[in-house]
Length: 344
Image (tube, rainbow, N blue to C red):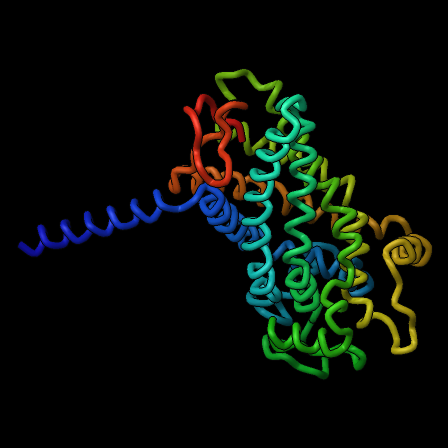
């Protein structure tokens, strides 16, 4: 009797979740799928992300000892959790960022097709939709990226915050909310968007190039292999690597702008995007504009692989309808017509 009751309860629960999933608009399903995929990918590569940020902002201290030296230093001084310092803020940013990025990409793509039907379905469509989706996601989640960078920038002598191991002109942040509060008190609301300009300069070409290269490479894949997850992951990884290489210097500029108040004296002038780019080139050398790029390559491949796989699995689990042909596009979260092929 107990076994039958448990099976009945499980069946009812399954029907309840099926009903919830079926009632969700398509754009909500895309938000959920993108958020989960982004969170999974970011958590796996969090240690490499921490080291990359330290390379970009504490070059004298960490670049000289290299990747393995940095790993040993963090493990010795901060323990295992040191590799995840700032990851809470990173997840708080990447989940809504990835959710918005995937969802708005799909929405922009639908709107462009409806507004400009003669544009076609080629890679240019993905370049434009991806660029605008990246910019939208950055604008809505940038303060969380700034907080993540500031928390990751902190290097302490042990797992407990220790003011003695932090420079005098550097604030010690106890967590996400504390960092938000102190940053807002120091520089106002605009301070939460410090470095957003190079982020936008970088994300528009990066997101656009990523989708453009991904779709362009898929065009050359035989039809029978286009639905393969492995093919998608390989194409996505290569596209991510190409896009990252072209736009990486702007990522370095963004990181240094985010921590400028820690690096500069009280009387030093806070520089803008172009000034910071020139300053890095002149004082630190042009190679500094690519500092941490090798780590980023190591990070991008598994990140993109896990992200694409997670997104595909979540879309399948949430029963997201496939992209339709021009006359059967998904519009405003509803389906019209009969789906004919999957294109992602």
